[in-house]
Image (tube, rainbow, N blue to C red; front, side, top):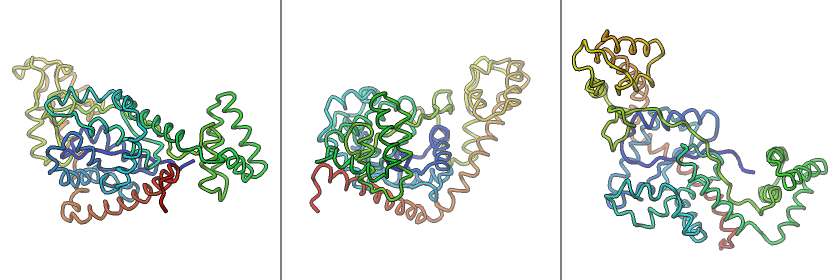
Length: 400
């Protein structure tokens, strides 16, 4: 049984916007209060669609980390690192590619979807076909049991779980596994060994999933239990082999409610964004120019908030009293569109103020960001090396 761990990453594609904040970063800030977290810059993933123009990836990576820090991600609570600076990601990706059926990659739902959306690019490359495999390597190398994703990303987590199962099935059957597992049971002491055996029977004969949870909790209580014995006992419990790669679980996150300036989902491709650290004058200018209900041609024309993109922003930023004021004022022409926009402008500027404040030290001295990431790279690589040592041992590829 391995320690709980949350892993999540983002591709460096430019300045982050409020959609990223409400859809991802606010959740990261909450998760870091509850769990050990690793957050990484997925710069190799950026190459899957940006392989023909990679020059801006490094600069975008540093800028993105500043956005994370500005949003409240705390390097004292979470490990921040860059994917390409932990080469073990590439090694595990390579080894997994040797045992991954081609059909598994071709059936990933987003593969054809993304090809259709990005039809202007030549994506007939292994890098694009294999990006779910690299994504799985990112997760499995840290034995992360929690991966925050939206509902549309759950198939990627299931793909990673299937890979872990396949790897453990192929390489987890060490010579004499049954005998070593039974010997590990005896090391638990008579009382714990009896409880473990009963729980194992409950699961394997009756499919009782709570028995697994209770058995894992029991193992956590055993002082001085060797790492190898713990792996054997986990595998023996579930009727598999030695557990080398951990099956990750999807930590479902709510879909972002952040609309763009035109009412569509906030996205760079739509040109409707407000960036996290955009200056107040620009934010105000953009919001004052937002389209409104087309029925309100004149100030005294009544409108319908449900047809107005500004109303969607009120649903994110305004309390019940303000929303009631908007509904009544718009429908009766009691307020103008600029009046309606002002509470949203004020709320966004208030939200951004601490982001500007947190970002400023890193903008003044970029070495602070570099030091945070260097320490994060070191911590991440230490964890990745531990996994790769076990992977090589299981595959018989450790040359000493």
